[in-house]
Image 1 (cartoon, rainbow, N blue to C red):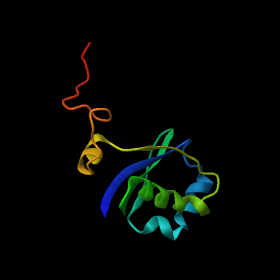
Image 2: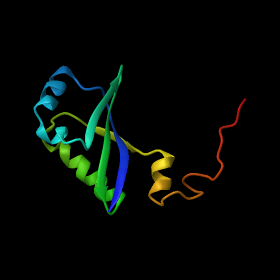
Image 3: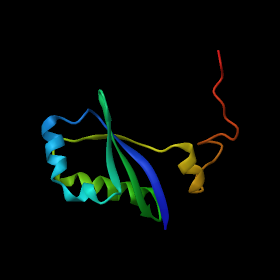
Image 4: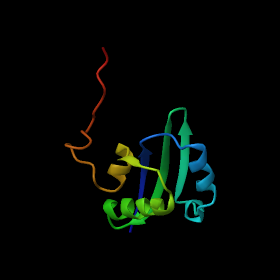
Length: 102
């Protein structure tokens, strides 16, 4: 089993009603998924064990079955998590990549 860390980015910030509903969803309180918000932006930080990234993401998305009106826009991982799980390749995370300064 691998431990996968990723973010589920929502298409819009949570509404007040959605925030209230979230407080009553027990599955979001087991420590594997947590809400992070800033003005105009909501995401869930996730940590799931699975053999595959696909399995981990599918399990996390299952948490949203009883969470009406919430749409996950994207799944994001940083290059450290890709490397730690043996998924870093030159096509995904170039070795020695650096942003060019202008």
